Length: 114
Length: 114
Picture 1 (cartoon, rainbow over the protein chains, first blue to last red):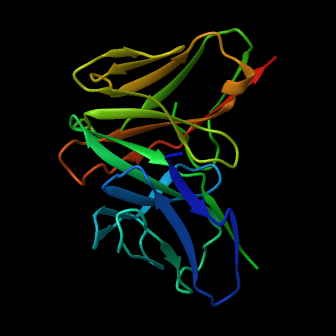
Picture 2 (cartoon, chains in turn green, yellow):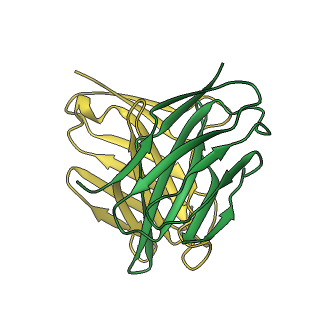
């Protein structure tokens, strides 16, 4: 069963704690992305990676970090520097197909602050 | 249409009616557009896409129309069903830049009444 998986579905963070959200894909896609979604708003890009061992900051990278050691995996760490981490986090991946980039999304992780 | 602030535009229809969801995109250089459907608590699901060399594309029960002159995109859903109730997002991309980086609209809430 191919697709994008994210875990956990819900995550609770204590003050000053770093937490890591998992994203795995078995679609053989080169590019992967992390978005943040707040209520009543669209998706905002945190980080993206076009290829293994390379990643780029998106529009709201402050307080977040990523790694891309394997093609299948793109974990996101929400650090203590992110002062307002409560949000729905979405991971996506894409493959170039006839010059168009269709992104496919995982089910999301909801992060809540205790 | 697109929302301002935290209030998403809403569209309420009766089951069986046709629905039209609108999106005004921002960049005249965008040449690839996608519509996504997002149900509550889930990740966005790809519906249909269109490249800028087309002005209309049809899928199963859905049609996307593109008017580049006024930078407007619309999604038409025929014979709307209760299962179509969700938030619908448009996204735009400029081919050749930032490898698949999409810019998302804020979304429209579609509610279908049985």
